[in-house]
Amino acid sequence: MALDRDLEPWLRLSLLPGLGDLAFRRLLAVFGSPEEILAADHASLSKIVPGKVASAICNGGAGDRLTVAANWLEDPSNHLITLADETYPGALLQIADPPPVLYVKGMVNVLNQPALAIVGSRHATPQGVAIAESLATALSAAGLTIVSGLALGIDAAAHRGGLAGRASSVAVVGTGLDIVYPARNRALAHELAAKGALVSEFQPGTPPLGANFPRRNRLISGLARGCLVVEAAAHSGSLITARLANDQGREVFAVPGSIHAPLAKGCHQLIREGAKLVETAQDVLEELGIVVMPAPAPSASHETDTHAREILDHIGFAPCDIDTLSARSGLASDLVASLLTQLEIKGVIAALPGGIYQRIR
Image 1: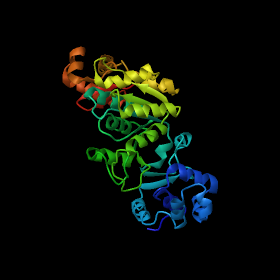
Image 2: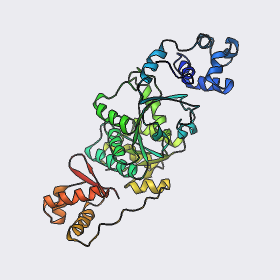
Image 3: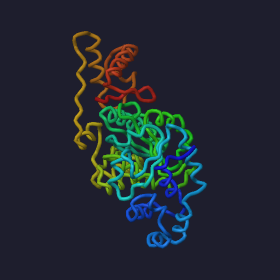
Image 4: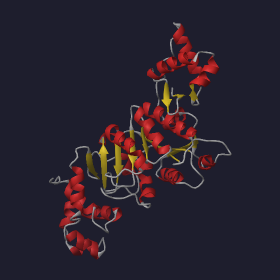
């Protein structure tokens, strides 16, 4: 397919070996546009970039690499966003090193919605997964798009929760968008492409190189108003993302855990350093100044509504299963299950993996 005339110069330069983002932005500052950069003479370019790179620019840029990107862009769900586009995420324009181009698969508009990053351990506990998904569901329902990195564990749970709410979810990945990594999250990636978005600064065909993942973390935090860490070891990539968020002027949040739990160490460390302690979604919303109208309480005009309100009280604010609720309330398990379905339809609770439920309002 013939590339869009406005996109081709951006692609040629972004795909050029040896021309990093910083040098690209410096060239843009001097020459004004990719077209002017490609039209510049070697002497002018050599004042800003090494001679070998200047020669490559004079020879037309990326060459064969353009074909791979052009083929990827043939899919109507695939997009290339440049610094010159109105759809470029406004939040990323506030960070020190925004990528000149972004590859996006899915819904471009979600990239400019208010967002919260949720990150954590790939080896999360079942409780941590449930907490991350529950918080993400509630925060997405309140209007915050959930941003994470598509890793196993907390990231995947955060995406599932975000997709369950109205504000959806965005995955920032460390590969080209024609590759799903890890492969176990393929179905989740497809759902994100259909209902949210996948984002990468890396060209199609880029494999999962170790150095790319710490680099993408600045975009996870940069896209969001704050970063929430749920379960992290004392030395983990999640803490890097949280500190990047702090450096970018974003709020940092952490969920505490047991003093004996290894995956609580990182969160406790962040809290000692000034991160906001989070027990409920409301803690995040209040810190960000987001007001959510409370859901109306279940009516007590009928016996069923009264039982539903009792079940809501018995759930509290921690994940809970049907057998536990039956024991607490004295109601039969089948009645409890029916009441939970009613509350879920009303948007007061969320069903989580493993047959447990979480109050979200």
